[in-house]
Amino acid sequence: MKSYRVLALLPLAALLSACGDAKEATEGNFRSALQDDVGNMGPAVCLEAPAPRMPFVMDPRVVSQHPELADRAKRADALARAGLLEREDLSDGRQRYTLTREGRDLYAREDGLEQGGFCFGKVRIEGVDNFTPAQAIDGGYTVSHVRYSYKINDLPDWAEEDSLQKAYKGGLEGLDALQHKRAMMILTNNGWQTERRFAE
Image (cartoon, rainbow, N blue to C red; front, side):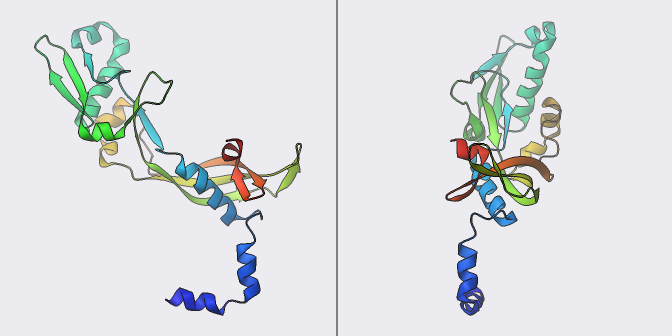
């Protein structure tokens, strides 16, 4: 209720100004546009599955003779420890891996890709570190280059599993740390958009 009273006391000109600045080069406008794009792109992290198809079978005897398969075997075992795969020891010495219920919820296989993966996490824009003044470029566009910070939220507990971090060789390290990236923003009739969103 208090916030409504404060708004009621604001001058009309201030309210109109707040509603009409979507095209200005400001930290707030850039942050909103980045969250609308980057924050809604889907899962932030995908761990490549050990095999192109699910379920799959691995033979320890074959793995021992082909060192290039060792990483796949480590990832399969680590994913099983994390609860995303279920391992079944077959009578012939091989091991069969199938998706668990949680694994099915996270497993994704994009059209056109041979290898699926376990995808999770959401990007949250934490702030805009700096940006260049808006400037016109060839083609009649007005752009600004932005450096922003973000974090990955909604990380599952199993992402901290030691065997999983070792199997993916650091691919899971530092996911909860503040990270930085750059983006080019383009001014449209509806305000600022990321270059990627503008090109859609």
